[in-house]
Length: 357
Image (cartoon, rainbow, N blue to C red; front, side, top):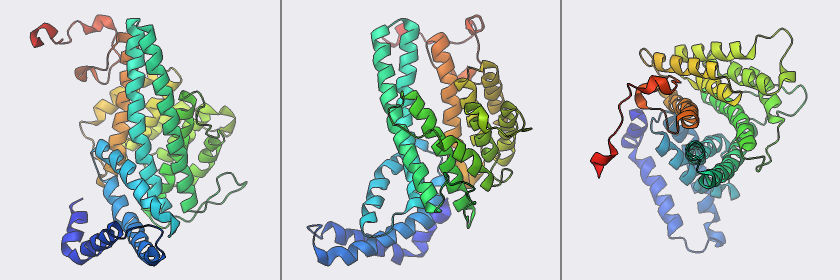
């Protein structure tokens, strides 16, 4: 990560050049001035090039998911405002919209947890309100994720709906991960839209398209994520499962174990999502236990740390949903990795609220 900062130290001229162009934009006056169009084009080209060569790898190395999603929400409108004068930066734009969706999803998670805790407490009106907010936020997440999927496919001129579609040419590993995350985001958009009550109108055929396209990326190299995507699709749409293929739950578990070996636990997050979606508490408990156990010797891929941190949030939320529904509160930190019933809670430390007053 330090190397990205050093590039500006070693090449201060580049930084001054970018800043001078941005300053010129701020002082340019009316945007309809035709004399400024060349400046806009130069600035758009500089920003697009910087985003693709510097911003994308830097963001993927981040460990602060909140800061990363804030970057997506703030930078995406700026970067895409220049698509009026230069080609849209769909490669980086796919990642930025993915991050923007994560911001909205974290709000949706909070609303979902409030709904479950209110429901547990019998506060029906508050539960209804929180549930409605969660649905609206899920619709926003679905729209953003669908846009991220479209941008990723446009980057490589890949039409996933085409019959016998050939795999796109992926020049380097950043192309591969952008394409793969685009497929994953499309799958997530379907789930979010379902949670919204279909308010976003995301096409359901994305799932089958993602299942086919996931074969374009090496499963071993990318920590089992391609096969995890396929396994989840087989659960959602059993008709897409090829004859003689392994059981989807077995595919997800194997992908999860590979994700730990390869230092990027996105597949484990998909297994947790599948478990809570299909009511498999046994699978969920097993995934949570394996996730906690992996922490002891886990060696994250530094280049893709952000992906692993997002996976951690997803797994944690799956656990929190269970605890909120069954006990009325989130997972106690000392019990993360377990789905204990009330009889197992006798030894858990509790806070004396009277002492805070």
